[in-house]
Length: 222
Ligand code: B12
Image 1: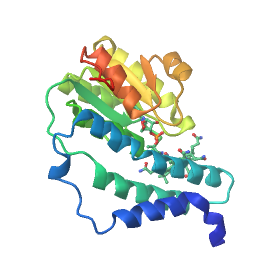
Image 2 (image 1 turned 180 degrees about the horizontal axis):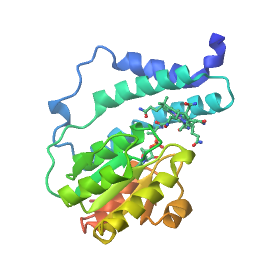
Image 3 (image 1 turned 120 degrees about the vertical axis):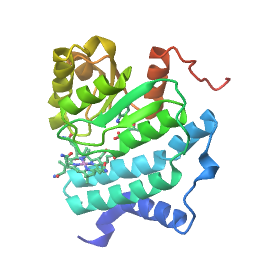
Image 4 (image 1 turned 30 degrees about the horizontal axis):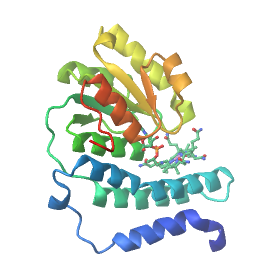
């Protein structure tokens, strides 16, 4: 592929990666991070997200190959690992989280997990491409009050319905609130599939979950 086709997407990612290379990964620095800094931490990901959107667009136009998607994802994961807040879970509530079966897009979910943990939730992250029964089992074992589903691929949307049906069969649907996020989801679609909420970003998701759990929703003033 001609190098000029690589465009802004990968260039931005390369700059980000080289500017963080050589730095020690944060450890203590991020412990007990105040909530507004956690939000700042997530907003610092926004330029990367824009770059990924550009990479996705070029892939859609067949100007990038799958290998470019993989390269871009690797760079972003590298940045995320270095900036993830490290906090000890308090007991604000329990959330089971995962990317539904059929989708391996995990970065958005990882940001949600980091943010929720930083805000004091106990998060059980089941990873990506998770079958419905594993969500059900984890909710049964942990007694989590919230299930967060991520979906990066439109073709994987039916898997959300499968999770809802599996929870009903297990008699657990009424004991858990379900929130969905990710590129492929829309509010309308997730409500149709039997979920309770949709969030366009990790921060929006946190606000919904805080409300459900009766936790004080943080505002800029508080
Ligand atoms: C990176 C990437 C990959 C990586 C994923 C690696 C990883 N570790 O995640 C790899 C290379 C593996 C990949 C593979 C594929 N991909 Co891809 N990928 C992308 C890309 C470029 C970025 C996605 C991303 O990480 N965004 C950044 C994160 C942070 O954003 P996010 O996911 O939206 O998450 C935020 C919110 O949505 C929200 N959120 C997300 N989840 C949740 C959950 C909850 C509970 C809450 C509250 C909030 C929330 O919070 C996050 C932070 O605010 C997108 C392009 C794009 N425009 O997004 C394509 C894209 C998603 N991929 C696409 C495709 C087609 C594929 C492949 C089929 C390609 C192929 N031919 O094999 C495969 C599918 C494999 C599979 N079975 O899933 C298409 C999907 C189109 C569709 N039909 O839906 C896209 C849109 C590209 C395109 N324009 O064509 N991909």
